Each structure stands twice: as structure tokens, then as C-alpha cells.
Image (cartoon, rainbow, N blue to C red; front, side, top):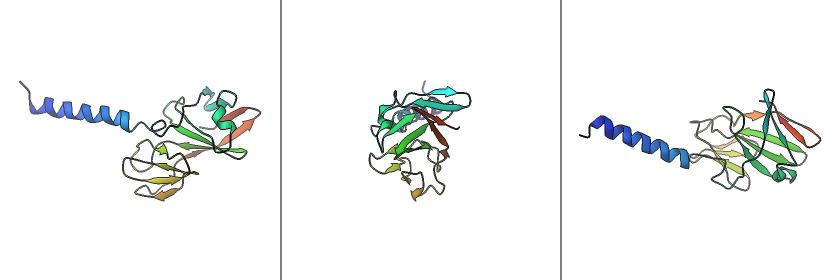
Length: 141
């Protein structure tokens, strides 16, 4: 016998599974996943293993840090590390392939430095300090 509770649980699980595929961010727009390791409390990535970041405007998605999902983008000689989580409702965002991050959940848009271009998000994406030593980029978490 199917109860109302079973029907509601099934609908909830189906919706959650759909969001896991559709709200995944970091790959839906074709941004490749980078390779990194934890170095103490920080995230370290080797440019030799992440060739996309050897080019200006290269971008990669990283999810190796516990509880963190990040985009790292190269801008000239600097690296910009931004949270891949929208500040409005904690959905994962995607890179549009050119110049901004889009959140498909509610339509927020962020510029390539994480600033809000269009709401409902009112707060910029969280940024993380980066440092470079040779081919090693360290992201301070």
C-alpha cells in the first residue's frame, strides 16, 4: 500500500537526485577539474599537472579540499581562487566560458573576480588568497 509519506519521500529523493546532476557546477559548462592536494590546511596545485592554468584566462574547478569547491582562474601573472558556491542559496555556480559565473538556481551572475553583477545574490563570491612559488600555487583556505 502506497502511503502519502512514501509518495512524498520518493518525490523528495527524485528531486535531490536531479539536483545532484543539474546543480553540480564546475563541470556543466565544460570547466575541467584540476588536480590538487592538501598541503597542511591549504590547497596546493602544480601548474605542470594543471596545464589550463599555464595560459592567461585559464580556469579549473577543484573539489579536493574538504567542504570546499573552488574555481581557480589565471589572470596575467596572478591566480584568482573563488568559491564555486553561490552566496544566495548555496547552489553551485558555473563559468559561462567567457567572463562570468552564473547560478542556474535563481539567476545570480558574478563577474570574473566574484563580484555580484545581478542578484538575487547580494554578496560577492568568497575569495581565497593565492601565492605562487615556481610552478606551485598555494590557495590559503
